[in-house]
Length: 300
Image (cartoon, rainbow, N blue to C red; front, side, top):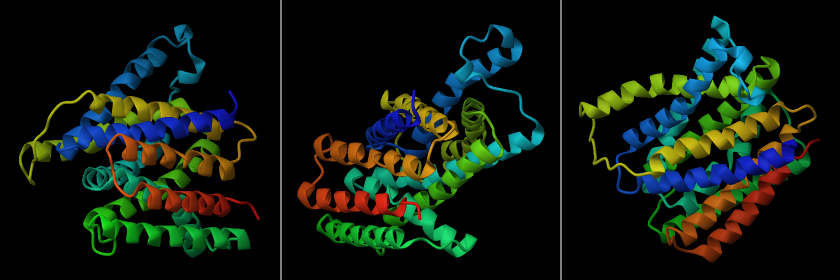
């Protein structure tokens, strides 16, 4: 399958993953939802890890084969798990308290933060079209802040908006790190995903235990079938994305904006499934945002 098709599949399931998160978090405690979603992904990968190590000659699916790693490579993947866990903690709390039609577009601005990080940290200089894209994204972001006021959301002082931005910034760093793992370190996609999922359980377990012991307001936890679906949909989205990035000739500059089209799924789901407000105004903001993201990803 081509890398473009894989990226489209990833975008679709990334949007469905966000919808599952919203359903699972509705009037539900955040940390156990996050933890059990992670446990689902790890439970799916663990048998494959054991099979690939115990009887590698009988393993039938090469694309799912988990290869052996040295200690340094395990540390690299463990660091990715820490990055993602940080992003998810912020993101899950935000998505619980904000409309999807606000959260999704903010998360879709990840290419903006990536290019700004490259400018201020790596000394890179975007071209003219990319700067226009940055201006459009910032204008769209400001427009969403105005729409948010109609729903009593004050962008400049709302802590859940701040959590969404933090999750997006950390996510942008994680995306850059993905490129390092897959292209520079040349780790196989299935190997990265498997150990990343397993290590996430160990990273998140202390937070879940602290929640059980009442170290902060616990909230009420209710089991829903959308909770394991979170892990399943994310695994499909990431598996497709990692394989797209790892293909020869794949263009990161196209993969990133195509994958961010997941905001369309999230936005429409928020409007039609969760009956969120101000569809017309938000749809204009989303279209402008997608145009800005596309311009940001243009090559010089």
